[in-house]
Amino acid sequence: MYNASKTREAVERTGKTLDFPSVANRAADWLYSKRMSIRAAYPEMPFGTRAELQRWRTRCAEMFDRVVLEPKPETPEAEA
Image 1 (cartoon, one colour):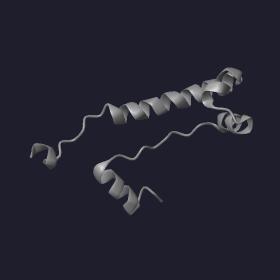
Image 2 (cartoon, rainbow, N blue to C red):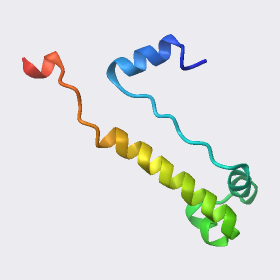
Image 3 (tube, rainbow, N blue to C red):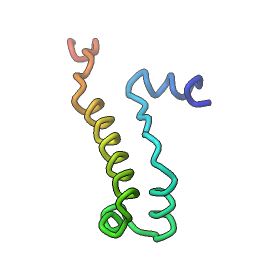
C-alpha cells in the first residue's frame, strides 16, 4: 500500500523511507509479554531468542548506517 502511494513519493522527494527488518515472533512476544525494554530483557532471554534479537538489532544498525553514512545529493539551492 505505502510502496505505491503518493505519500511515499512525497517523502522520498526530500528524504528516505526506512524499511525496518522483521523480528521473529518469539522475540517480539517475549518483549511484549514481559513489558520490558530490549536492554532489560536481553540478559533474561533464552539463548535462541537473544540470538534472534541480536540479529534484528544488527540489521537495524546496518539500515541506519546506509542512511546516515550515505552522501547527501547536491541540491540546486546549495549551489546558490
